[in-house]
Each structure stands twice: as structure tokens, then as C-alpha cells.
Length: 114
Image 1 (tube, rainbow, N blue to C red):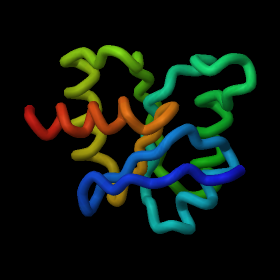
Image 2: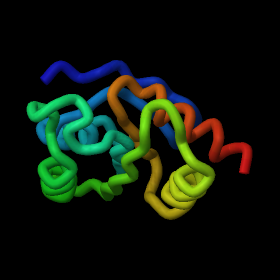
Image 3: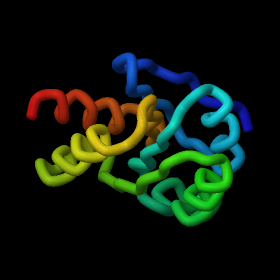
Image 4: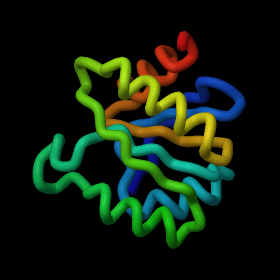
């Protein structure tokens, strides 16, 4: 896989586009301790890697992993609060991903305003 561009939002949080199971070893090699998947399963069609496959690869790579799927066009207050809670509980640095990184960025910005 070609690894997507990483955008650093803070010293402890970065975002990027879609990751696949093979990218979990890469994320660990980059120094990330945790991964948050914000993309619902099959949003991109049947070829999109599933949460289950990514979770298994993350565990094997020694990463903490959480699945918080949210819609691209709207993130509810409850989803924003859940994202903030994950950032508070997970070991840093954290890498969050979605299709392009945009909704993970929106979640991060909204979580900072809680």
C-alpha cells in the first residue's frame, strides 16, 4: 500500500486517509501507539478493508485500536464527545483516519472545543 499523507494536528494527534491492515505495522514503525478508525465499514464499497481486519492487524502490530465510525457530512455531539474520550484514554501519539482525513480533522477540532 502507498501510505497516505499524514497531517499533524497536535504533538499527540495526527490524521490521514484510509489505512489498510498492512498499514498497521507501518503506523507502529512511525511511532504511533494508537489508531482510531472513523470510517464506517463498506462506505467505499466492498473492496474497503473492514474494521475487523484492521483491528486484528493493529493488535498484531502492538497498537491500541478503536472503531468510531461517523458520517462524512455530520458528526453528532455524542460522536464528538466519544472522540474526545478516546483521545484522553488512548496512549499517544494517536493516528486517526477516515476516507481523506477530513472528518477525523473535524472531530479533533470539535473535540478541542468541548
